[in-house]
Image 1 (tube, helix red, strand yellow):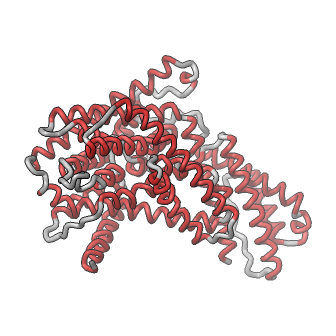
Image 2: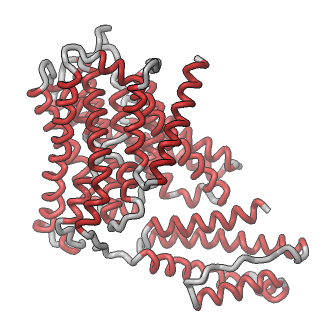
Length: 533
């Protein structure tokens, strides 16, 4: 046990070094994760790590889904809901259907139920991979929003397809009519359970005397509690986690009121999700030799051929789906024609950004080892191997070429939103207005008698006239202790009111959630600096 733990830690350290190298050469780190998994499989003498497939599903998927929901903008999601839903549900079912029938026809002794199982696994693109590849590139916010929203919902829809296909394989029976009805019941009730559970967590966070450490611990526990609660009633734990994450993200301003809490949670979740991504690819690397040895009647060459075929299918289907979805609604609806025209460049980027990632891999690894009657699960190793090939092809091939495609087509901003610098200036102007109003009404005496407060007001007035200048640092070392405490109290009250104003801005939907989050993060840093002193 100690040797295995030391080995995993060593591999994790090596993967982190690879990620650092990826950042240095400006390549998306998920690409290096899949390469790291492949390299690990070739290292001689590596032990095979056996984990319960159900445990893999439970450990990795709830927090990955919850984190994706947490960083999804509800306003942007709702604004582009038509495109997101058509992609997240329509494309997932379309891909699952075509992959199911093609694989069952091409692969010997591969049943239709196994085809749907494979289709459910490889159908959802990975938001982390797409966002990492597109980071720092001149890509319209609309496209980023659609990709992130699609990835969140299609994770849920594909996992439901996976669950139904898994039941069909285990039981040997499947009814499309019954499955369709069950789909809406399971998904809908999963959302209900998720909203009930997240309201309980909301009350705990908001009204009990929690600390930043406790808040962070509770947020880590929340996706697992929501998932297990829904699964206990045989509803969709995936939909429970997604709905709960979206709700808590939207109400986070009410729940997590201090900068230290928000910054602490940001650090905890960023680290945890990164480690989970790395661990999944380490696990596949350790299991890949055994998987290739267990292909049975299929040679490695045949398995790679099937993996390449499925890769071509999922890439081609995305193009066949995205272009009609981008343009047909504009022909049929006058309301849709009011949206910016996607022309041919936007759909090209969305189509080519359909890279598969950690969710597909974790789902494949969660396939049970045995059937309900104790026999070996059919074609499990082949399905996992094909999934690995699909992830490798889409991540490495599409991930490395996508930046070049964006540069070649000279993609320009077509969204009906303000440029980033104008949004930042507009948000800061509103925040300064709130601060000055509060100083004039509530702290007029402090402004006159406390030099620090007076200096702060003068600085705000100067910044309002010239918004591009940043707030100057305040030197407090020579002031009296009581003045410093009073000054900090004034600033903390102002920061609290500014946080409230940021929530109002989010409801007004004039500024993007991304720019509002940047302003909120700056307030959190300012607040934490005072709280640490």
